[in-house]
Length: 414
Ligand SMILES: *Cc1c(COP(=O)(O)O)cnc(C)c1O
Image 1 (cartoon, helix red, strand yellow):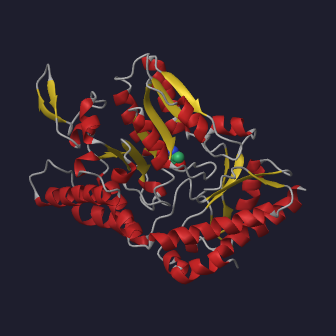
Image 2 (cartoon, helix red, strand yellow):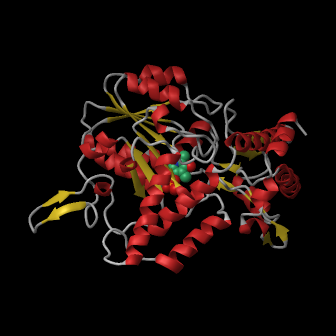
Image 3 (tube, helix red, strand yellow):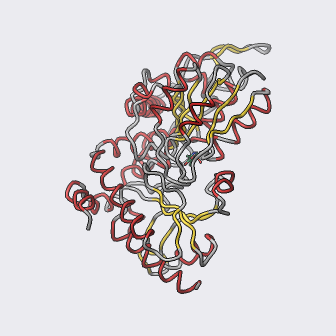
């Protein structure tokens, strides 16, 4: 065992963590589940499941508008959840925390708002490693406004080409969007540096935090970005809920996108006036239980020692990378020096889909395909990859189990 791995084991009781996740004791066709699809979604600890059940069992009600006690209680928990998120990312104010259905919707809200301010003279910068959510959304916003979409290249390792990034920034650059961590490759981007450079040309900065938030500490004030977006379901919380964090001045500057209840202050048949933030951005009955579940996940996650979490996850990736490098006929896709939580690979013997199928027969859950990053796969010259992605509850034994299973896959395909 490497020194990194030993250090992780002493500081971090992974068994105690595992016990809080009921699904991890499941078997798949009689084999213990080895869940390595955490970049797609993480599992949920019992306390999050309990928070959802408790909400529906004890105080289910619509928020903000009831004249009764249940509505008060639901509103208190729901708005308390917003405070929890604000504190977690160190927002300047709770008003900057907008509930959405997830990262994808958060980016769409920003794009549909800002797109109305984009002109044909503007440029929008994204990277070659975008998830479709942070690519197609801007691509379409550019088509509508006539702005130019500029794609910053990556190197063959899956690192962003920082020289190109700097060179492509200019006074026409209106918005710069990039992922905190690449879901397909695991590349950890130098987001503070990228943000500082973009702010130097006065561009707005949106960070897609879907893959970063569960692995890296985030302080939006220190980062200096304008928007940081993420989903609860990759952070041990429920599906269908996420956050758009944005600077208050910007969120109030652009025209509203969705309209309806909650987001209005006054309505007549011919006209309407908008509510204050955060409600201005939140039309209709929100995902109340989702917000409460997300806050519980954040409370649970925040109690962990982040240094120990990161050391543990680094040990998992280090072990996986070492074994992958030694594995005959396997090629790692994405070899940036700074990576988090993801081992993407291809094998000489088989298509990624076959690898995924044969691993599943052995209880090992991974993801295969283009990982919602089709242009990136094209750029790297692969049809797709097999992707094992790690979370805090994974063990070094599970990494070994992945490679034992891959050895069998190799025999079966070979
Ligand atoms: C998962 C993911 C998204 C999309 O998140 P949803 O929860 O599906 O909206 C966007 N970007 C990255 C980097 C992701 O990993």
